[in-house]
Every structure is written in C-alpha cells, then in structure tokens.
Image (cartoon, rainbow, N blue to C red; front, side, top):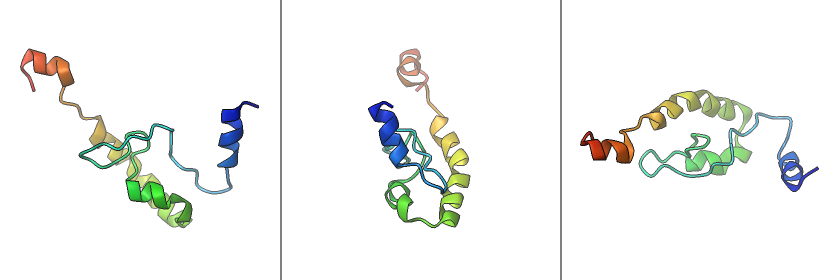
Length: 83
C-alpha cells in the first residue's frame, strides 16, 4: 500500500463522503473551491455536519459547478479583442 492509499484510507468512514478531489483552490470571486465547489465554511464544517446537511450541500454542487465552468475566453479571447 502506498503512502497516498494509506492516507486516503484514514478518511474513509460509513457516512456521506466528502466531495473533495484534492484540488483545493478557492475561486476569488465565486468564493467556491474549484475542485469540489464547496464554500470555505462548508469545507471547514464538513466533519461536524449532520448527514442531512451534507446531503443538502451535495445536492447543490452540480449547479455550483456550472457557474464556475463559464469562461470568457482568457488570453486567447483578449488577443482576438473579444474580452
């Protein structure tokens, strides 16, 4: 078993799993993690949340993901004069 697998095993429990995908970067405007789409407060409080609270957060994540997937085009668009 590798160190990563061993570490991951520690966090496995018989409860709603965290949506964390180990890409922990908070979007500066949306204030959501770009990896799991949770707020900082949701991430910090996840271990203390009741199962019903976790289910609520999990059900909201797909809609949040769509808000962060909208892009204006980045550098390529600026070079074309679209941004």
